[in-house]
Length: 259
Image (cartoon, rainbow, N blue to C red):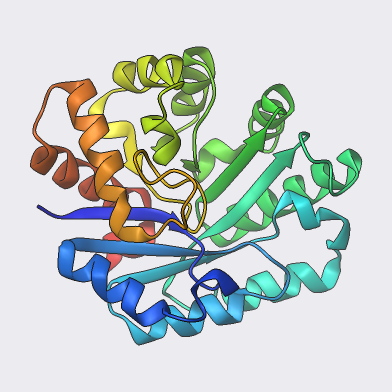
């Protein structure tokens, strides 16, 4: 069996004590690709360094909506510079978060729009974070012509209608350990209805450990729990789901297709 973790935060301090061991555990278990996310003003360089050490690790860079208040012209220059590294696959994670509102909503929308425009200029996909902001997220994606580059709705928690709209814009839908939670029956119904070629798997490590590890630090090896859950929903083997979602990951990113 092989599988892919399309979204983890391996540069966070939760992994400072054993980062290489965490990576080795996942690799030994069959991890084919791992994408570590640079979503803070400071961590794109750290993500690039980590990707440079391991042939199966790639990275993204973007400014998370929590930090959108920090967006300025320097942020755009920093992202464009990061994108010169061919192991960078996408701009992200970017989007809107109206749950915590760590940044004012108008600044979130501004930073979101600017980063989509940058991604279109660079010809790179985007990785989307949206929480309690689904209508604005979809409207901005449509208005900023994000369908031209596509990308990923990470850690999907929306409705079937939202999934259909997102996939209609050329996005794939990525599920995390939250899919395995006992109270996630509605989300599993949504996941079961999404065509196989549009599915991705992730951990969002160190967050959202799947059942039965909920409440513990998450790590990439646990993406196997997500793969197994999706396989059961689609009535195929975990091996087949791992292969399918890995091929989906490869086809999402122009830079992987070109390599």
